[in-house]
Image 1 (cartoon, rainbow, N blue to C red):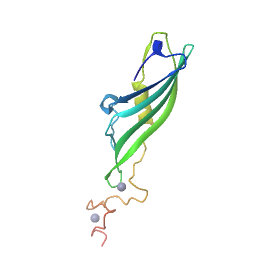
Image 2: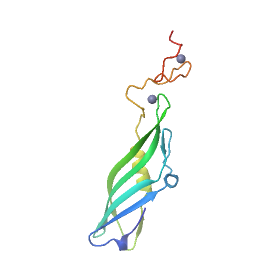
Image 3: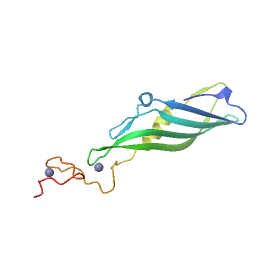
Length: 135
Ligand SMILES: [Zn+2]
Ligand SMILES: [Zn+2]
């Protein structure tokens, strides 16, 4: 997302943009961004400072760490940042956006709290039924 500092009006401006996940390089093991990330930014300028209130939202596909099943979710985050800017500067926010997304990745992804995972012996998904190993 690019912000043209000289185009920010007195009362601020709301910008929206979709950023393709390929452009942000945010896919990781366990989280795949299946659609573009919706970005809404409220930009305000006061003197030499620019204030940005940013809201991100994107549908994602998670992979459970325990049973490897895939499930859908929504990644949401709000954050704000302050930057010192020059009058005709073009501010590129993609790097900040990427970092904020990565900071919010869950440490552990599980499909449900009581997920039983896979049998270490035969690989059977124990949520869908017991295997014969324990017998
Ligand atoms: Zn699971
Ligand atoms: Zn088993």
